[in-house]
Length: 272
Ligand code: KMH
Ligand code: ZN
Image (cartoon, rainbow, N blue to C red; front, side, top):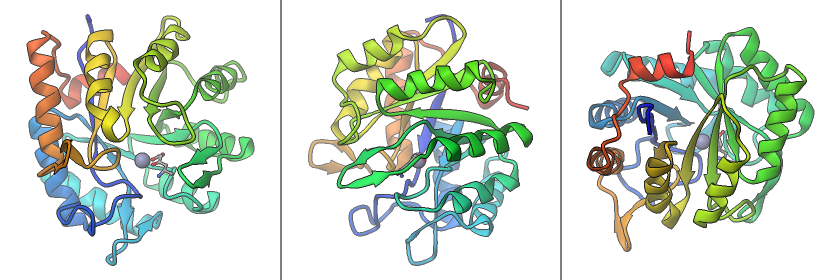
């Protein structure tokens, strides 16, 4: 556990609604407050989805621009990682467009899968198009992996030169259609990595906390937030995104795992 812990906060997502979580941050101003609280609590990366004023998931560049500006005004040190996954069904064209804002990082989903009752399409040519655009604009991709085959696709794309080392994988476990959050799944994924990779875990729903703790012990990074899970504990909706970060930071401290500041995270991940 020699390297510091990078905590990512996925503050909004594309699936949760204000009906379920009335305090879900969806406007640029709300997202800026949520991002600031998360960073003060120990997060260094903000994984960002945006919504229209009515709450609908959006990949509109202008909307990303507004949210990024609002976040930067409140918490300039935060690393902003925009989603190119968007909501299920979003066109590749729309998923590509906000990259022109040149955030430091963006998500890159490495395969097609059933996603609950939907199909999350990631055609091989679209994955390459997104990766090429990120390379061109010097945006570091976070590679979203939901099952082991996608991890191996990542290795293949690196061999082909489409992805540049060091690769940064995010194991998103617990989506119905992908691997569950069974601890053996994370052990298996990590066992496939050699040297020279970064990895983190985003546990979905009830898997969020146990997988976060497992990653802390195994030396990985951690993502928490309303995108992946809304419950602080069974039957109790979290008060804020920061409440999730505070808990991870507390456990990391107990385990003697140092928490990366955004500056340290930038260095570790080789951001520009
Ligand atoms: N909303 C999911 C279908 C990402 O941000 O890149 C995809 C997602 C992954 O959230
Ligand atoms: Zn996302």
